[in-house]
Image 1: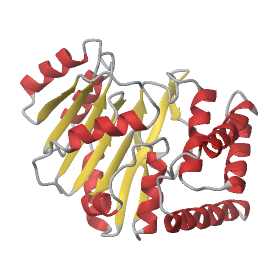
Image 2 (image 1 turned 90 degrees about the vertical axis):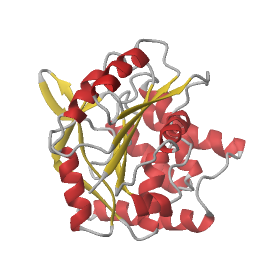
Image 3 (image 1 turned 45 degrees about the horizontal axis):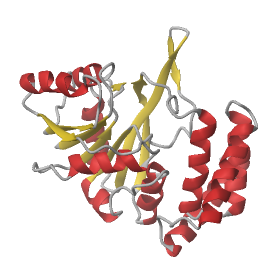
Image 4 (image 1 turned 180 degrees about the horizontal axis):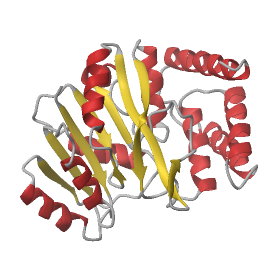
Length: 286
């Protein structure tokens, strides 16, 4: 199966070389790696140009517009600058961050998963960070959720869900909408993706949780599901308690502002039903 990668990059000079080398070492190479230099002020562009001269499948897309950094929406806009430049035919599309490294057979395995299951819409591995010299799972969300840092989409699924929403919560919306349209989502636990920058490191855990609450509102979670999710966040994530309050504050902010929803009422009803069933399943130990 053929695939194309889109990699948004903002000030990734310290990480992106390792990511590119990880892709170059793959047993199944991409037809194209589109790197979107999203207004970087460091040496990201020059470094990518060096790699571009060596690997003909790398294409650099420069965005020199100065935009305020915002959780979710800016990275999606950068992704689409790369997506719009795709000219190659492909079977699956990859959104990949610039601060990762992948196992050598990662994309070979992605191709196998999509070939084995025609209803598989989104796939990925698991994410790990280094702690005390060991690579351990980065516990930021459910383990069966494909992290936004490395998503592989079957082309038909990506097009049916209408692509990515330019909003915080885009990497949850895509999976929920894929399921709404009858696609499945799969995490392969044997594929450990190494992450060199801790999730939320730039924005801070409490601040990012406010954005998570904004996203829950825009996904039409409703008050009760958001409250349960906030309680879980406050119990599992430092600073304990405060992270949960931050989620609820974010939801209330969006309610008071009447933020625009990113899913339809029908899609929202499906999302709430899906979330309720997942929560009940976990309570029952399934």
